[in-house]
Every structure is written in structure tokens, then in C-alpha cells.
Amino acid sequence: KLEGLKTIAVTTNGINLTRLLPRLKEAGLNVINISLDTLVPAKFEFIVRRKALLTSFRCLLYLQVNCVVMRGFNEDEVLDFVDFTKDLPLDVRFIEYMPFDGKYCCLEILLAQK
Image 1 (spheres, rainbow, N blue to C red):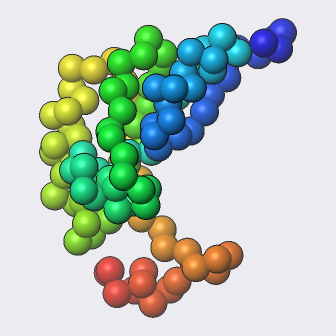
Image 2 (image 1 turned 90 degrees about the horizontal axis):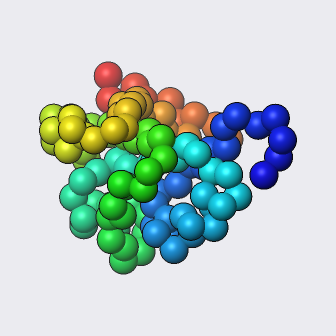
């Protein structure tokens, strides 16, 4: 722990969170940003590119869920996210999908979505 720091945060997709959380909390972690773009297990596995289980997010820390909304993939889940999180002590941020190819924005993808 470093003196003077009020917040120590991590952003994660949650895959290893259950295993790492005790050590992270000991180190002073007090905020977790979860990248969770879907509540559908098969879509989650597609995004993280491995077999994975959605982690339980009840871990006694301040939680924030970031959800990138993508047309044709998960825009039908926005109300599911609201329902899933309405009674949990966390904030959900819906983020617009910004396609990038390396260090350049894929303008043709952006224009096709308009």
C-alpha cells in the first residue's frame, strides 16, 4: 500500500478475479471496473476468446461495470443489464463501440453503422 493514495483501481474482464481478489484487496485495491459486454455466456466466451464463467461481482468493493454496446451483438441486452444491476451496489456505464484496427480508426465500419 502506498501512503497518500485514496483509490487503487483495476479494470478486468473478471476471468481471474476470484483467484486474485484476496491478494489485490490486501494490496489496497478498493475499486474494480468490470468490462462486461454481455450477460450471455456464449457471447462472453467469444469476446474473451476462451472458455470462461461469468464471475460473481459481490466482493465488498466499489464496482463499476463498463458495457460496450455493439449493433448486432448485444444491443438487445441493454435492458437486461439494467435489470441485472438495479439492486446491486454498482454503477453501469454503457459505452459506444469505437472500432479500431491497430492504431487507426476503421472509418468504413463507423460509417456503415450510421
